[in-house]
Length: 214
Image 1 (cartoon, rainbow, N blue to C red):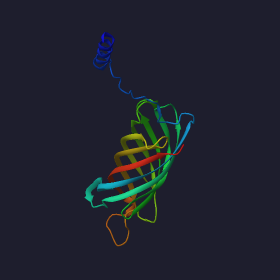
Image 2 (cartoon, rainbow, N blue to C red):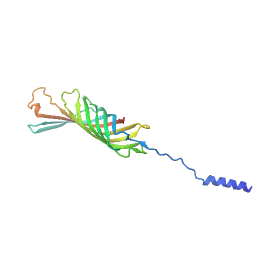
Image 3 (cartoon, rainbow, N blue to C red):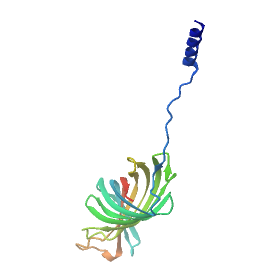
């Protein structure tokens, strides 16, 4: 009877005094940048939301200028392919080119792209933030009143792992399109076309997805 009482007491003591261990989460490292290759190739697309346009017309001999807003298509988009060089795990610089449309304006942009990613290329988190800056010329398609123009864009986004190895950049930013236009010479005007400088500034917000292929 004494032995039975001792055994029962030990079982009761174990029930109240032996700690219960919780399952611990095992952290793993995620590769957010392919540092085994110095060159990077990416494919992307964006949706462009038009904020508005400005017409800038100046007359060199008169020393006069006119600036007035104009309507633009609210929606557009772009498709592009890029190649860059990885200087380190944070900084990539290269060239991107593709096709962009905004209403009736179609163009082939070709621009330098600079991207800076924050954090480590290999880390326990599945994401990291980045900023980008684009600048370069635009070549217009099928528009005799627009010559070679340019664009400048800047913004930021988030690189995420969409699965085990597939990487994806989701970004948003501002783009300024600079269109150099040829004045319409149909009809009779007091000022010759050679004396006129005509530019259009297109203000847009870009929301896009970029997929690193290499």
